[in-house]
Length: 168
Length: 282
Image (tube, rainbow over all chains, first blue to last red; front, side, top):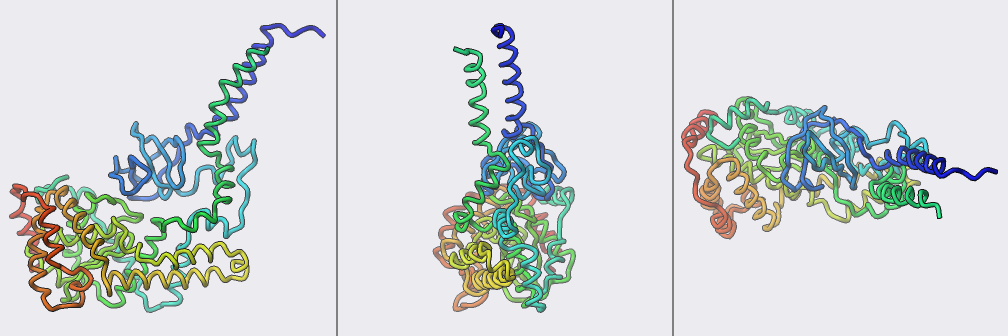
């Protein structure tokens, strides 16, 4: 057999490198875009609700995910880098559509439903509230819904703040 | 030796390590599964806090009627939002909501997750908007510090995880029942704390400190809190129920707040604020 030329070897290794990069990049989470689905969300400097928010992130805003740590995503939003809690998003990244990494390594292992509940960290859910309401029909949840409908729109609040010589 | 192969390996190594650190979705699920037992000690998350808060609010609204004055409710929400946006927790899971309870009793309640009640009696005790802001800022402080939700006993919260993790119970339909009972118990824990027994002295003082910060950041006069607490202390002599039990305006508390507040800011808006407060409350 003819020995492989040096040029051919280089081409082969470059090809291997290219394929490997294509396969591994999705695993890094680079370029993954998530859309904020819940109101009242903010970008935080640390993965902690107690830290002072950097900026509000409205519903529908798209953020670039850099990485994930527990319940928090490190994201880039309009050039600002910070953390958003997973409650902002409808479902964990990659949960619905398997990406390239899913094709390579298999989709996430299907857990039992109690595992899913535990993994999602949901102990008290709307279903539990529903069970509680059935048990306590005397509880006035209709009034609670009414209270939760009380909202001040941003323009009205700003006008209120300005009129009272308060800080915006 | 194959220099190019080593070169390729060296270039790829950081990505392989990075791939582990940044958690492949499948690997993350597997990892979380492996550490499920360890999650038994995790804190209650914001969504769970919200559902507990809703049930606590429903229980409070079983005892008190909601005030039907829409303009007053709107005004209280405007004052409340003005201070809440300056708190350390400006955006709870479903936001803050403020409501007035139609009773002459002097009281205020902060439900976990951001629903805050203030009675008509307490609003009337306030002399101006800055004092009402002080009341609401203190209650926002309790929400931000998670004082309500933290009154759920650790033992009960551990039981919630036991219920969720018991596969056999799930199969026989026991988990839902267990969780509802534990939810019920959690509501009892929180209700007893915020309506019956009150928070610890430390929690009260921390909420006062949070309120002073919120008021200052929002542009209200933080001394309004000193004036209100002084009036409440005089009013509460000999009283051991309602707000005088749940939020005792003690001389120690007053002294701490006095030490925390700075000078009153010069504000041409104070007269306007007082005017609009009186218009709403009259």
